[in-house]
Image (cartoon, rainbow, N blue to C red; front, side, top):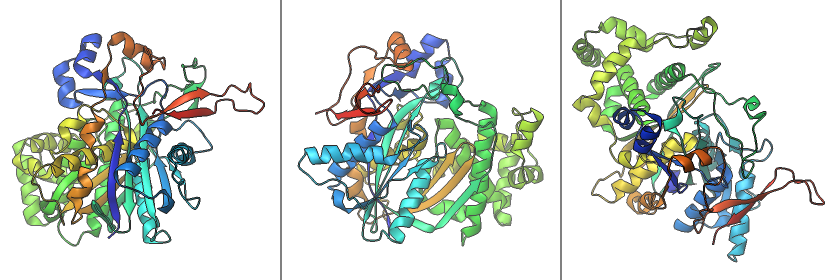
Length: 481
């Protein structure tokens, strides 16, 4: 069965430890650690979504002995691209140059190079497109999807501790060696949410140039409303997904081995999973509703009111029109979910593998979900855990908003493929920033001498139009040897 056969990760060297950030900003370390994590990565002033993506793909090619001539699909999922014309072909250009420099053939000329954009869901959409490609006209080829993003927020905003940067590349094959994708079992949701997390181009007007002309991509967001949009989209996608099941939702969760949700920060993923499970109980038979009633009774919530809140229609755009974006549309579900998250039942459907590692990474936007999967599979491969034939649930989300549910199964030889991920190695190259260096890098300035890792792509220079041809703003790249 088609699906994932390999994964590779790139994380930039610069790290902010959140306990230090709390000292600089006066925030609570205990609260930040519980809700967000322990740290986040930052791209260097000479790095961007394209360089990180190319680095991750080159690692993927090396670790899984990929023949570049067999690659027929190279999809880039990102919301941090800086060219409004070209997309994944920029990544291909760097890779071809590196491969030819090694005396190897470049990627097949007969290769699709699309870019997918929908906030943090772009990479998930790219995965579905790659799977559909392999199921049809690409059945004799290989597909690579790379998710690469820069998550950055304005200083002293509520989003500042949830920053991050990195890339994850994934190999998809007609015969999966890591995770087999059940294409017929999925769930989708989308709806326009107005001023949910957005990135209008007007934000760049008047920005002063950074050292390598990279714009600071600080989003427009409204925290409470964006959280509501996330939870509503997850519930909607699961409603669609549950209709495709041939068993009760609770029975599906009983057999799931691993669960992964998009995680802009730790608590958000936990809430989304809890909401999805409670919805499954609400849509189930009498015994499931009885279980839901017991959970509701623990926090003195009416079962009928809870079911109405979980399954009822909501108009989030109306909140914008009325100026009530801070309204809590899920007070009852949130109360029940808080208690449920502390229960053995919730622990049974959560995945501990990779969680601690992800706390030190931060929000990677499109790469957040596959990074967690890579961290978990890499860690599980080093234990006696058996994933072969067992189901894996993954849930992607993109602000604005849209959500996707995808189900996979562990391939028979998953452990061999997982051991090549080497997620722990991606964490090793670290330069911890002090307050001054963090401030400089946040403004796009070099914070001391350029840090260069072998095998990593960097921006070498940016065209200024002074040559005999027009190259204004065009980036030139180098691979550190």
